[in-house]
Length: 373
Image 1 (cartoon, rainbow, N blue to C red):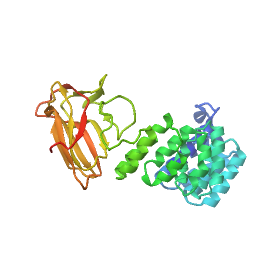
Image 2: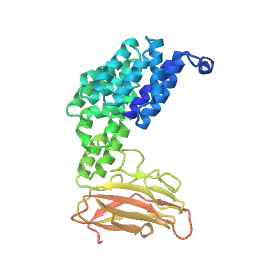
Image 3: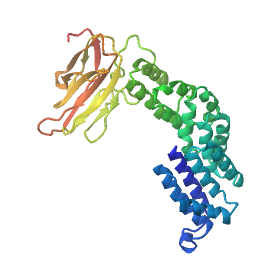
């Protein structure tokens, strides 16, 4: 909430000095606008530190109110202090008064919306948000935490959805924040659009990552298939064995590294070009799978040196890994009957005694069942 308060204060500060030359503070330090600007700065710092502003700052702002009774800034400052102190009734009265003095000012409405959402007064909060969207062309970024907090409340997402459907960028930001907690899944599904666009990629990735971390592997996989329109396979297997570029996102498709430790790039026609610099431990490619218990063989061909490169399979949840050097041309592994609900397959680079750059190509892979472990 403090971040939202500071952003609201910043919005008022910017509005307060618009049209006033920057050198005005030096020329006329006693001007009400300059005094209010300084007070807002000091109060913002105090709120961020979690304590009330100094008495002299509050007195200076109140002095502005006496000299300029139609200035909404002092009312906003008092309302902000009351809100931070938990005095919601007094804060509401002050913020409403500030809004009446300047009906087009966004800052009092930012804070009122946060106050209303905090108290589960959804209709009042949504009315303020609707105004902000119209006034600021949908740029209500400081309200994102409050909107997400409100959306997570039972039944709130359905009330919020019509407004966010008209603001897909804001909806994506709200969903991204909600996606950090798997418990918010009902609210996420209620707000999510039927067909996703560019604004939905980030929150979907966050949600899948959070569900896998929460060990909800089957649910994550089902959502991933729905998001990417991937038909259900006859049996759980490895996705995209040819390493085709694009397509559905990780974790149930390949995540490919491109960084200072090395790179993994799809080859035209299939396969993976690996460039490993031999200095750092790194994962060049990985994919999460939901294989049934049993023995498996991952077959492939390697064109070029493969020093320091290996396959590894880790059971999830857990850390114990089965590994095989890439140069062997096959990777045999076993998925045990328990403790291995999901698996992470990795193509890793491990440095040796002396750094060596390795440049090689791995052919499309083939996963078969029943190989000797």
